Amino acid sequence: MMAKRLLPAAVRQLSGRPLQRRAGSSSTPHAPDIFDKITFIGTGKMSQAMLAPLIERNLQSPPSITAYDVSDAALARVEELFPGVRTAASIPEAIADASLIVYGVKPQNVAKVHGEIRRAKAERSGSVRDDAILLSVVAGKPIRDFVEGSSVTRVARSMPNTPAQIGAGVTVWSCTQNVDANDRKRINQVLDSFGKTVFVDDESFIDMSTSISGSGPAYVFLLMEAMVDAGVHMGFSRETATTLVHHTLLGSTKFAMETGEQ
Image 1 (tube, rainbow, N blue to C red):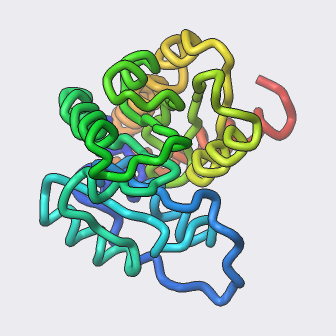
Image 2: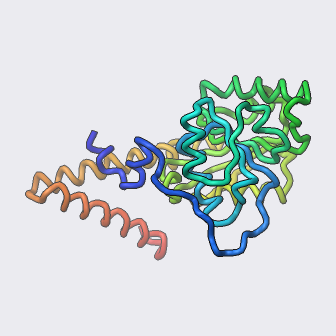
Image 3: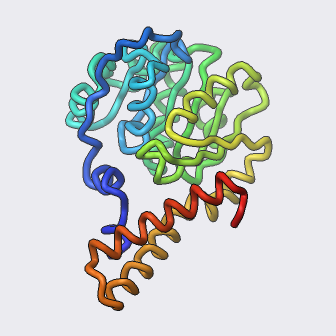
């Protein structure tokens, strides 16, 4: 589709494979980690979109991050892109002593992760912390599914959108009442690393946001497609028409944000 061709270069790159960048060391002194240990279950696009800024902005040190994926190739890729990040051979190993556990799997795989965490809690084999927090970036799964399925009672649910993959997303999120103000602030820091965050007390607003911020980028891409095609029809080259459209939409958005005019 034409809309796919109009995606910014970084997003197109992520569509086929992860960004070709390594989260190298920084000369800036490392601030205290946001969480003692963050575990990522699943290392797909959104997990990598979170990993990169957390490390590059010195928000979380690589050794305090553990990743698990069913694919050995995916874990090797994480080790290549994010030197120092630990990888685990199983979910119980990955979640041991983790203070934040990020669900970055596909919706159809959530139940399997629930089962592994639940068994680890029951058998104490994974040393699941009593104060552990689950953070979901899985679309369409309500908070109650995570509480009931995993037996972890402190849960945050988030809905990032596609531009989060290049650090320009907007994420609507909510959490259980037993996540206190300090932990909410820390979760917000994690989500803020790849864009703007909006916290809502009522989880139903996450579902409502799907039609605006969640699906919104697709509508914008369709608008881009129509505008570029119109430009080509008028006689512009596709490259020139694309440049005109991209910068028209980018400039208009910045203008609206800075002036309040729409």
